[in-house]
Image 1 (cartoon, rainbow, N blue to C red):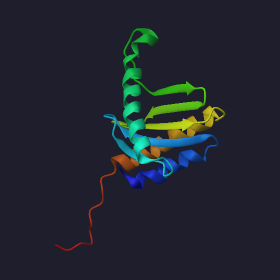
Image 2 (image 1 turned 45 degrees about the vertical axis):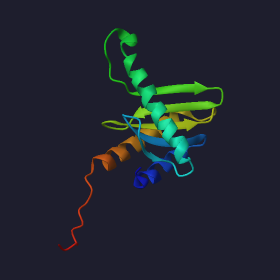
Image 3 (image 1 turned 180 degrees about the vertical axis):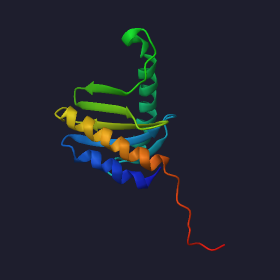
Length: 133
């Protein structure tokens, strides 16, 4: 798990009604989570969201008979929402929210966050230039 990305995910929780956020890999592994979300639960969510994304992607043909690019999945429960969007090559961002969340605000924040995460995920780690061999 990448704790360096967790602080970015915490910014999603600035939207009133946002509860938790996770960054997952396409194969269902947890990459990062918001600080107040327990690791065991985050691992469970990561695995489940990978399956949700895969199922959603397989339904693209249902829209117009062609295979379309998956963009997001939204699931509604009695007690809230789960948003799942692409966060770059092989990564997905999931956010849970209460029923009264402003869906436009949370969606906009998630898109902003994906932009930031994309840069962080594609930037190679810095080498220790000051180290001597």
